Image (cartoon, rainbow, N blue to C red; front, side):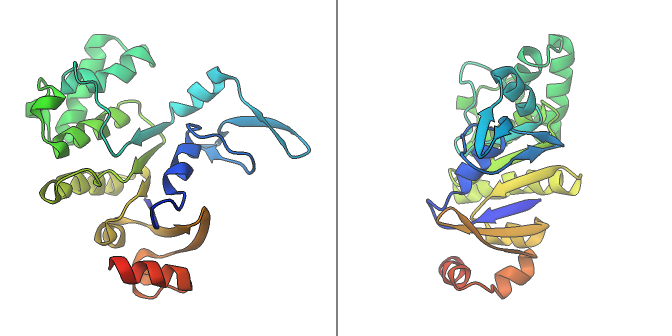
Length: 223
């Protein structure tokens, strides 16, 4: 797991959105699981955007969990998790329901499968969103401040699910303000400021002894 930290407006969410081409970029390269994302042929410094079908195909390898859940309010937890496999992967509804049920069990919501989002707490909704991202069997899952919209007492249940995923070997890129979580679970920590990657390193070492003055200033305010 890679965790990205930094002040608001530093480009963290924009970077995540570039990974699955929800955001266009003008320079550089983005690769996921051996496939280039968003662009192909170049003439000089010109980027040539891929055909929408190619972009959609690449996005199947990248799951994303947003700050505000973005669940379908008229569908149950099970139906929310089933939607991608049925519509995109063309999985049968029976197989998708079994797959979705297993994922809801994995995130601790097997007993909430028939509940609608309005009947779930914020933490439960975010765990459904995690199960929905996993339903597409992605190579990597992106988390954009997944606990920032939750009441403090609900944060732990979401972080526990993310920790379990990390321990299972899932590749994850997490934008977060949860420094304790980053220290305990992340394999690498990256600090961004003003659209630039300022410092990277071992989470425990970097949080205890940051080398860059901008990193030091930021951490002095949040630790």
